[in-house]
Image (cartoon, rainbow, N blue to C red):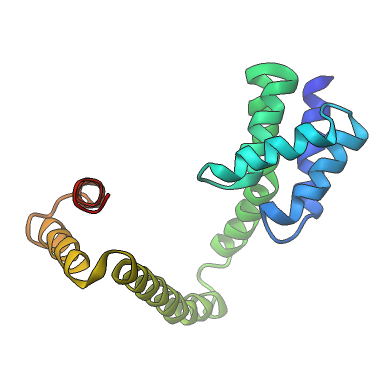
Amino acid sequence: MIYWDLFVAFFIPNIVGYGGGPAIIPLVENEVVGRYGWMSSQQFAETLALGNTLPSPIATKMAGYIGYDVAGIGGGLVATFATVAPSLILMLVALGTLYRYRDSIKVKSMSQWVRPVIMVLMGYLTWSFLDEGVHDAGWIHTGIIAAIAVVMLWRLKLHPVWAVVVGLVYGGLLLG
């Protein structure tokens, strides 16, 4: 029964909540603190504060921790699955629908028209990263890291993870 309660406590807020992790936190708190009494408000606030200090989405971290605290490893798995299940289900339905109508002119047109939007978004993201890198590390270090990455990716044809590792080592040794 505890697994079902955990599932419901995290599934419902993620179904009705809109706006990602921060938007569903009050809904999760209502379930965890108000409805089931698994934590006090203070414990929930401390869990939220700890979760915000770590990388990755807050909703899955909170679900994993609270689920583990309530019912061990199984509880952590159930709560985390319940958190991602609404998005997973919606994505599978949407992809299934797109796949079913993949030969439709409208679906093909939609796919073609979304590509430029994605390109612009990726360009903006790249520009933001470059701007932040230059601001934090300066032009020289940013240029060196970029040149090393270009050589590793285009000339040596290495996997991108190696460029990231080299950038981390460079930053840790020379910028830290």
